[in-house]
Image (tube, helix red, strand yellow):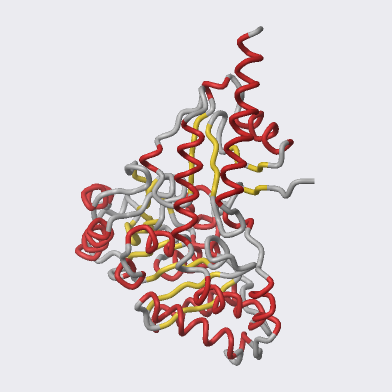
Length: 353
């Protein structure tokens, strides 16, 4: 049986044998007591990478984002962010439940909004209105199509927020993809942001884990909420070591994922009935619309899965494919060939009805 080509998400990556071996040899201690040497080394490494005073190792990027919201806000406050943001769409209403805050969503362009939109979204000082407290951006923008925020726009949004004494958060779940695509170092992209989420389980290929970084004052509260939210661990060095390995071995190769995504996008664009904007594929995310095939996204996903290609259906006709380190260029070329065959047959069948 052919190996599954899993393009459903870059979270589908599995630790390589070399990563597993490195993890098995990791020195460990009590993480909750800050005595795990591997966790401490990873936190220091990521803090330096992001240009922050400190970083905190956590089970997930969702927890990292939610801790940041919790630290920066008070119940009844409001957060400005794009309508496509992960915090809005994929964290189970966490800001409302955990922090008691409202979300003011703006309509950016492929997930990227402007300082003017920040200015327009800030509430006036009025006891009848929620208090605007935090601005959050997502780099890269997932539902924006893997869009990379330009450095000047990242800086401009942060500056607009700080002019009004607001806090800023960078959801950098795929920050290293942005680094690979733009050539701008992570610490430059994180400059001006009071906290940063850094995920290990996507393009970096780790089995678990993320970090949130900021200054030492932020970290005092962040560590408290980590415990409150159930994120404190014991001998976590075994999993944290995967992050250390990934930073040494899995960063430079992200460019190959981006190349594979473009190959996939160009191949899909050749299929009649598929609508895709190839020029918008900047990183490892490929969104495309299958309405013209006369099949729903769920039907296309099912037919492709039967042939060994897993792709996500994100709407009635919208689909998302994600390249990552467990998918080679040969796999991408095979996936394109299968999609061309499956969808070509679907159109031929529809024409004969």
